[in-house]
Amino acid sequence: MPRPIAWVSTVSPDGLRNLAPFSFFTVICPEPMTICFSPSRRRDGSKKDTLRNIEETGEFVVNIVSESLAEQMNLTAADLPPEGDEFTFGRLKAAPSDVVKPERVAGAKVAYECRLDQVVHVGGAKDGAGALVIGTVLRVYVAEEVWTGSRIDTDQLAPIGRCSADEYTTVRERFAMIRPGNPGGPSVPDFRT
Image (cartoon, rainbow, N blue to C red):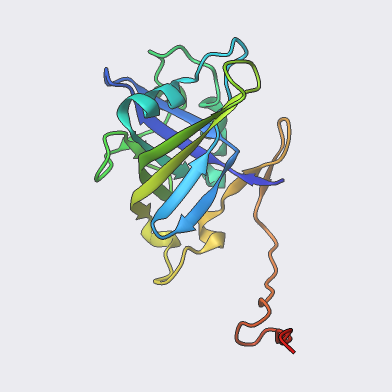
């Protein structure tokens, strides 16, 4: 803890929109840019709409949740029926994506348009089982107000993270450490002698 939140938007083959938060989320590698998140199964062991949509269409968008969108993100965690629209329920506007069919959250300051690479199912079809969804990032959206020209400004993004149960956290205090061997950092001893 804390864990970043993947706010994943998908669309079913029938065109039904879905938006749900997942706090088991991270980057895998930068080349090709690849991210992953893990949706768990429902209590009855069935797949959640997000996973089903991704398996059927091969596309999704990961939106990053800023403090200003925390309440709406929480609303989209509701277990709506497949025909329920979390964008509408969460009082959110959608914006078209550039290269995938699912829309992104219009107010999200960072979003990753992804193509499914693979899904690894873990634990079978029971409550508590899950899947690892691995996606290749095809396009990154970054709002101008959070882009410094070389990186995303964490203060301007104001991301939130999930702790446990109903607890979330903000990013207020940070510190930096230069890794050993990098310019300005501690030297790395030569163990070859």
